[in-house]
Length: 437
Image (cartoon, rainbow, N blue to C red; front, side, top):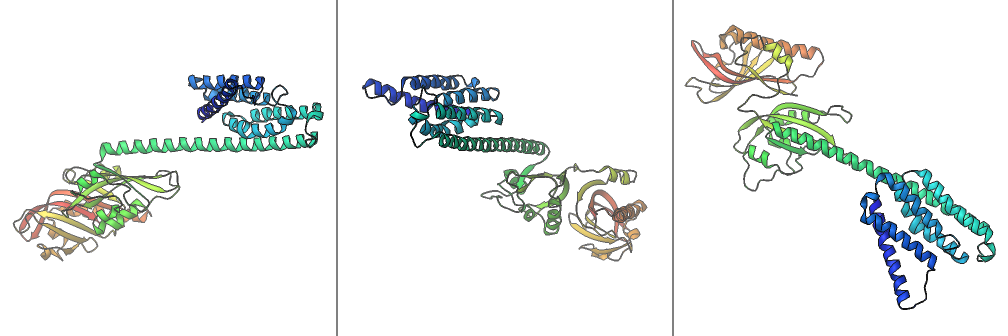
């Protein structure tokens, strides 16, 4: 801003000096006396030095430039530059085109008070000592009153301009800090995630994400801009995921979280994903979310709380059971659902669904082709005793969490080659996932 002001003053002075040279060339009456002309030449030299050597104008020298320019401005009101009948009008001219613009250079209000008071002293002294030469209408009391008004108005404008520039600088710094933090968060998420998207307060994507479109096998002219993130999820997951994404309050000290959910691609396949969310506030007060999406359908997830590892670490399923999700889903502590793929001919390459009521220790519901197991006890379905113990442990942990008043979160586990008997005397092994509901 100071360099811009220096450039503007320099251009104006070049114009003034050009008109003087033209008048001298064509021997036209000069409208400026020689002392004022040489003062303008000195000012032009100062502004030219600032243009040729930008290092002269820096934060540490702004007050120096302000003092020099204000003293030069006050010199224009001296008897050597202006006649008494011109001084009163010229004082207004200096306030509008010199004193107020120069306030850009002032970093301390005390300098503005002292130097503007110098203008007041200059005019007041001339009003008393040259009273006879002033216009009869401009008596000393009128001139002093006018200068008091100009002094107050100039200080007010200086303070307002200084406050405005300070707020502008603070907002610029704050915006840069926010952009830096946002860029750092994006870079960190891109190291671990397959796609990073930005969603607004309505959970809609603010711009198209080619990475997310590739994950969902959406080719061609597909544009995800404006798409609601939860619309890309299965209906049963969308509501719970939206609750997760909106869980932060305005004054939350750590508006960041990670949870598991699923997305549906263009082939209706469900992708198990880890979602990393960071909520931030824009300079206009709008809330936005930076969301990193990582597909872990074919690889282990990154979210493995220590408490869960301790609770199942000594179990016999330590080598076949891994934690895969911790989404903020409301759940009942008396049922467990399981999605499995069996190896028997009847169930080969097919997905089945079982719902087990842990209160009655029976299968509550099942999908085809194993719907015949409905009503079967857990001990009949799972021949290995440690499987039943695992299910009971999951139930007890859910009850303990609920009794502590903590929010219950849906715990989903992936198992591999789990022994099961869909028909008496026909054991088989299944691979899939189970979740406390």
